[in-house]
Image (cartoon, rainbow, N blue to C red; front, side, top):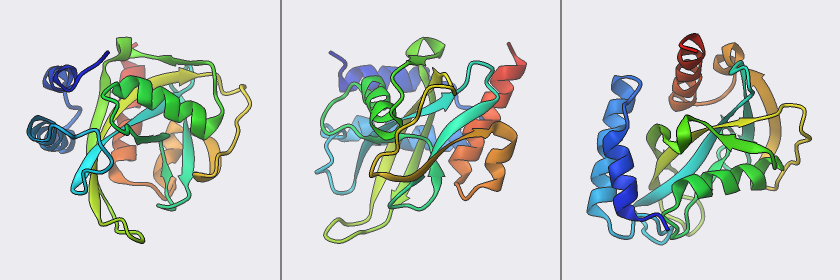
Length: 185
């Protein structure tokens, strides 16, 4: 079973794509090292989350969800709820949020990207930080999608069209990193 120490080692081995991600990596690594309960949603300051950047076999498009609470186009992902197996959590979130069943981790399951982003207060839940561990996952765009209650929409989007969506800088970085990966093939 994966442990917090395994995540620390994976983060230490991760090579950031750019200066923005390097800053995020330092922030995420400091948090995971400092917080023994980093995977627990009950840690009110923030917690580790896991997500998957889902791409087609040609690395030309990605599957995004229109997040119901954040009202943005994002990659599938969510809380670890105490489970340090971040890759398994990311894959579970893809299945739950998209209905995809034929998904394959790429890069031998190594971390693809990291990000730390603020989540606004909502109801009784205070504002907090999601320390997101992201994996590159391949899926077949012809597999039927199933919308969950966590999203308003699902869409396969060409990488060059991601910038035209209501998203955030980290999603743009994921698209840029994928284009770079495709050129290096």
